[in-house]
Length: 288
Image (cartoon, rainbow, N blue to C red):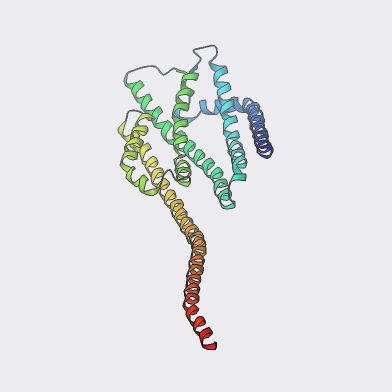
């Protein structure tokens, strides 16, 4: 009981240290984000979709809120890989060497997908949304006057969901690794997944069929890529299971065979002994 309690205390101490490291990195990067928030905001204000538009603040807190949002967004973007590494390092002692290498590869792969999702959402999805709103505004003959808080909230509501959707392969790989999903199940769910992705594409894009299709096609490609990765992991699991059964199944069968052989030889010896008893008695009678 003392060993188990000390082990639990050690784990809690390690968890506390890793949480402190993540919080320290987050606080430091928040300060850095406060320094770089202004140039980032000015760059986005003068970018192509809204270049030359008049900006307004409809609340005294709008400028401060946007300033802090960009600082926190910068801190989260930099702290995310640090958080993923510390999560991996915390569960590392409970993994085999092959599992440690496999899970460590998830971190750069997840960050790469986040970056690709951000670039796709900012340079493809968001301009389409702004183009649609601009056409509707001109069609209704409305003067374009944007509030800075409303504009960036609209941008975040598009960029963040699309960036997270690009983590689908990582999620499928993890669920396959813990044997919740497999390629056969993903094949059966393909039609429902396509419909769900189409609905998501329609929600995060303007109410335009072309825009929804343009966003849905990359999501479908991501789903098929996830099925491909799931198939690779599933084949490795089957090979490992077969190797385990071949090794430990024979090991379990060998003692049973030995026991059966021993019993058979014992029985044969017993029968032979029983058969020799009359011969011994006959020899004794002859000698007499």
